[in-house]
Picture 1 (cartoon, rainbow, N blue to C red):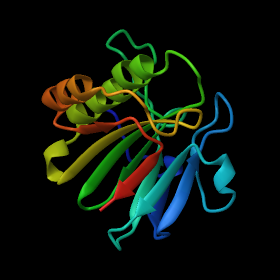
Picture 2 (cartoon, rainbow, N blue to C red; picture 1 turned 30 degrees about the vertical axis):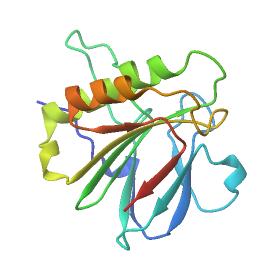
Picture 3 (cartoon, helix red, strand yellow; picture 1 turned 180 degrees about the vertical axis):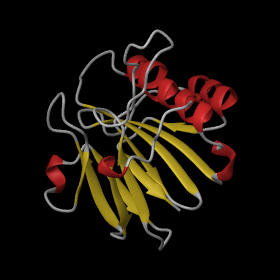
Length: 165
């Protein structure tokens, strides 16, 4: 049996704010939605769809296991709606964060999700590696982003601003 990504205790449903943030304060606690104090947001969400979205804290809430039973890597959060699924990894690091965020945390979470659910039901499939210390990534990683797309059919962005259209 696959993982349950829609555990009620891990969710904040029907978020209707056009703009909100996702925060992650400490190791061992789940990420959460914030409507106030934008300076504390690691990821800024702008929802231009006019439809509510559901937030799920994945890390420290959704149980993902390797075949041997040990805990697997996970991204911090997930946003879903009828048309969107967005996997979000939150970082506050200066160096060498992209590979771990993308290859270990986002990729592993997407793999688990695909084993448990039909991801093709979502029209917009996105993954964001967000870093408050690097809100906009400066160098081009076109081939890296393309390889991620080819592997997952999920669009990867290295940015802390998630825009839902």
